[in-house]
Length: 288
Image (tube, rainbow, N blue to C red; front, side):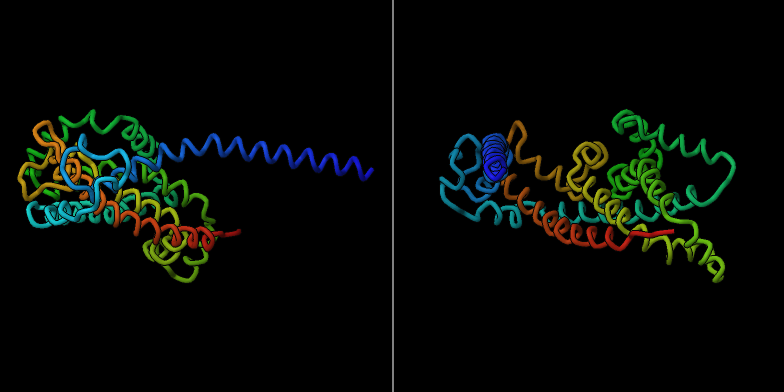
């Protein structure tokens, strides 16, 4: 009996060892393919020269320099691009969170005429890709003098965010017990107070997720800023940085330096929000 147990144990250990080596052999090349381009871009940001063709295939093989970062802040409008992009992303995120959460609360907790039809309309609007309506968007912004303005671009992003995010937040609110609403209403709370004091803390995880996704979308979007913005002082990070790698320019190292700076706030934001989201999900469990 002991010999059988020992044999099964050895067989199990051999299978685990084989599986371990298979996993290593499969995921090691995949990890290299994913990590190497990121490391290469980081090394390009610190490498001398401009052209990508002159860069060493070995990261940091050409030495280290800070000239590209100095050029960004002294010879370009990088700070203006950063300010414009931050304004657009923050305003889009804030307005999307408020409008989508309020709309979701209304659709989840109220009964009114055409409720189902309106929800289906939001879903149908989300089916079509945003570029399908680019001509219509351009004409509408031209009519309201929204072209070449930051608020016009913000309006476009908000309009695109509302349909799907309303469905997303409504689905989350539907899981919250109505007994919380009823208990608050017995205490004399009105609908807005229930939304602000009861609902918002409970749905904090989905609100955090919504705020992050609504912020990251406009941060490096290129298509709509290219269509709407014209003036150099209104450019965003995407427009400004992509200007370094056009047909007439081949300044990949400067582009890499700017991309590296743009990624730093993302890393900080995701690090902080990840901890907050995990904490929020842990505190958001509600039982009837």
